[in-house]
Image (cartoon, rainbow, N blue to C red):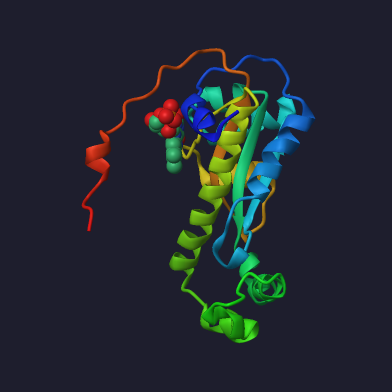
Length: 202
Ligand SMILES: Cc1cc2nc3c(=O)[nH]c(=O)nc-3n(C[C@H](O)[C@H](O)[C@H](O)COP(=O)(O)O)c2cc1C
């Protein structure tokens, strides 16, 4: 499928068939997430795949939206704050892969960079979530490509969801994403006109 067709085909699906999603398709979704770019190639995004009816039933206590856990699969898209510990290594890998060749970054000292890149907690969380959003939209588009429906869901209780999923303090859940075969055929949702997006041309 052409990328533009996947973009047009992706709609938030809020009703799913009970039909199981093949494990291979879930692997394809995670592979799409893996290809996402991330700042300094930090790759802080992690996923919990929730498939069993028991686990989905427990997760349902963390969201007021029943359709989320009625889907046969739910992905919990998380970020790992400990990823920052690997920043020096990620930068060294990039350098060794030639990513910075012929740019001023070629002389960069990866250890020194990691030290200078320290952020306060709120800024760091925002940065991590930005990276996760890119990875999760890769998932949504690849799902559309595979004929699967998804929906971004941020209406959930962070504490309850983390408890159900057994996640440690370093993890934060960015969004839940139900995945399954759509049991509805959503019309394209309203969008602003192109002219409303374009502030100016300089
Ligand atoms: C960051 C983000 C958070 C969202 N959170 C929710 C949510 O909690 N519940 C929900 O039903 N839809 C949620 N959505 C889906 C949006 O409502 C939807 O993308 C928007 O209305 C446009 O519709 P479309 O996805 O069908 O194009 C979210 C979407 C994004 C990108």
